[in-house]
Image: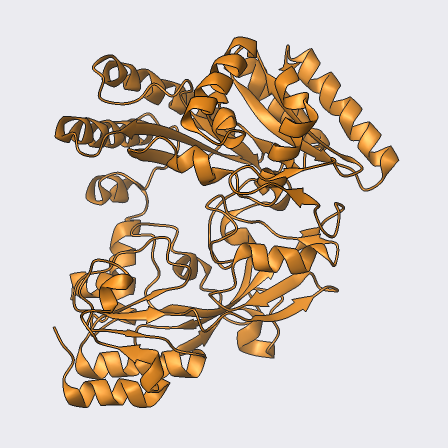
Length: 489
């Protein structure tokens, strides 16, 4: 659907001729979807004006920032937020940073390192927006998800500007829950469809102490970045254990003693992918590592504030893991390998080959909850993969699942993958069936409150959250100008 000349002119008057495009030869450069127009606003005022025009002309819109994902129906206004790329403030005293949508995590982290600060970067990587909600490698000591979002500036689907928490009352960014209105559950959209309609134009992010170097001496090129020398008072190791129970015992003790800067339950397939640069090399390294491991394991980074603190944490790590029957992989202790993992897992570039290697596609079930319960569920989900592996429908990746502790083990995340050829219709259907069955099993067997299964079946057992969510969308998007609202009008 092309915009009328009158509508196009109104949008153009907001952003200027050079920041709007409706040329069908150019717009597909973004995605394969046919858009009504692509518009690049520069600030909150322009975003608000554009959304009000969308309501006036009954045209849907969808914002993107770094553009990793999203749902883009035809005939929508695509708001490309790349001009909104400023770090507004780094408040060292109160430990928060305020950013616009197109500030990527590596950009913010580089500035924070200089100040002895860091933040929770999401596992999707440092090339994603610093505003991104989710979990990542540093959850163990920073916490994850929406806990790190403070005050937020949000333009609703009707074009109203909402400033949550302290920002709405005092103009300060330090708190997302008061003394102004708290809209955390709506803004973070923790329930399906997982997308909050409207546009986030600014967000305050909680910061944490960083005792590592202000600048890394990085060598190599993607995906083989590494450190020539491990920085003082830092160490990376991989421990494997004779059983899942033993591994979990070690995780609990490490969390109780707050030793680890990072704890990630990588399986050996993922470790091999992260330290190699080709499929052939990865297979060789995987076979080598697989011969070393005793069973399930995790990757850890220990960081001390000084030499004495580091010595204590290192000694405690070794004792706790040894007492649980764990052994450190000698291959990971090699300086170059340790340097690769140290660089990638603190700067969060470790998912490059781990996710996109070998071609094909993958589906996953990410779950949050009590870590031991999510592990037990994942073991069953892994068993359910075996028939698909035997039939050749999915790849045997050498590890059933991976996951990590959140907030020193108070919570945990576990994720399990199925890798398959998307051109194989039988494989695609089998993986989709596996996902549905395992989500329902998690719900019915009370491992955790999954919200990824059929909403009309799961919702009634969880306070009818799905109905509350639908009613909320209707209320904040009465004209259906967001794809979510449009589906409900």
